[in-house]
Length: 145
Image (cartoon, rainbow, N blue to C red):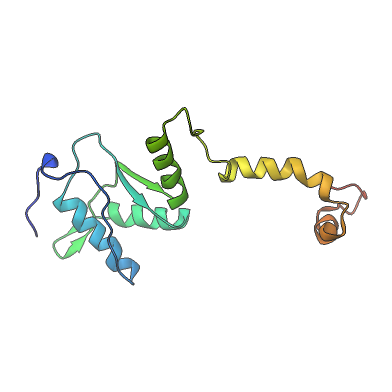
């Protein structure tokens, strides 16, 4: 196993690990974390494509250590983000928190409510007829919305 570096030996930055196999990529990340630990109470940020991938990665990282590889035995201090969320955090860091809102207007939680507010006005248009038919209940002709 490669020698571990002290936490202050590395400059913070962006590390790109690549593989066409997820298991290999996970093991590369585990090996990187073993050899280059962060200082206590610092979080490692990992970009993922889905919540399922984040869970799979954390479970693999928390698996028991083995001489031939394996996990870290525990997976704490790992923050998993989607690329768009990291991008928004970078905008706030570069342009300032006063210039950029805390949440992106395209964040899922905000977007759902925006669509729910706009949808009732559009349900009577021909383009939304399939949706209108889908959300109507059998008991009443009124839509659920």
